[in-house]
Image 1 (tube, rainbow, N blue to C red):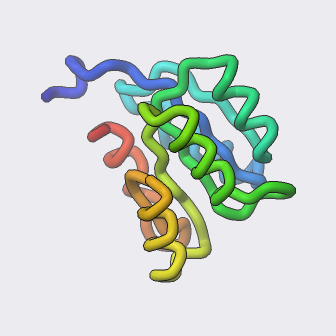
Image 2 (cartoon, rainbow, N blue to C red):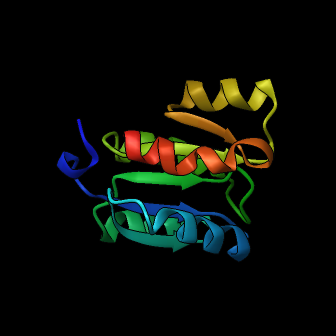
Length: 125
């Protein structure tokens, strides 16, 4: 399916680093499948945005203040099973990859190596 025929997606970026969030916004805003982007820096802010907005894709870091990204991943999978979650983290060990896969993520991305693959992955969803 060509990008022009794909449904535009609302993206929620959840990361405690505003620098990472802004970098993601800048690389995603040029993708034609992105409709709107929303930002959250912690669990509570992300949960509130999921309640208020129709989110299609979540880019989620594991390391968040308070409740971590694993708790948020569990919440999203249970409460919003139609939402696709891409875990984007520096905790890229096999342990975390398997854990996130078992919890229901769609993709697991190592921030230090695969950051540039994000536009391609989001476009393909």
